Length: 295
Picture (spheres, one colour):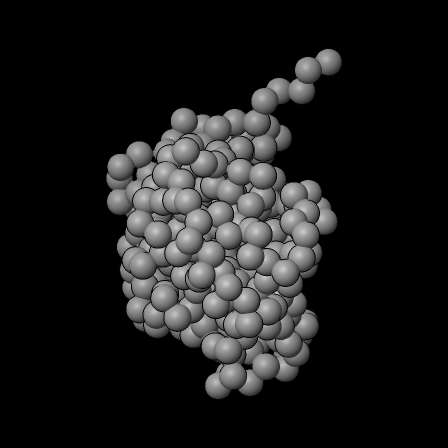
């Protein structure tokens, strides 16, 4: 099943190039305010029991052309965004040159797999742009794209065993981990508004298939930049989920970026990024500069 959030934060099921509003099939009143949207996290938690009603509503409701609605990020109010670092061997290798150029030295600790946090306020949707902060542009720091497979947690948990981790995953979506290359803290460099575009929808695990066999592609202005299969992940999706849950309780609706593939590179205002993952869809995102402050 492909779950979308659209227009006034309605829940939809996507079939082909149409979406059916299934919001009324949920067993609680709809709250359109995204800051109060506990219904989404509850849906992630209870999806197994809600799925039959959602499928029935998707079969019976009127289908709206996707072009007639505005898609939002397919998550609402996650308690946290977790991101994996140094999870593709070729990306680790390319980061030596990137850090020499942007930092003047290689930070060896950053070449090892680990996880860190990004601000949930950095989330943007598939029809939003990526806005580059004016102070970062003014200082001349490079800002890079990182197209990644993203996990959305269903049933949360703590100390999740690797073999049990797939049962805690609701599904997958496409994400961009936009990153400032500077000496600042990793979380700070990646948490500006719009630095976590997600979309175009969430594909549930049963439909998405094996997370170790997705093709990730990204182009910038039509130029190929990133191309990898997730079989190259150094730490698999179940192991990422298990590892993260050892340090912090995972809650329904939490988001996990699984790591940047090789081919990361700078973006500037005016660029257009197109990212796709097999079986999950695609997004096209314009890059723009943050507007000057009016005084």
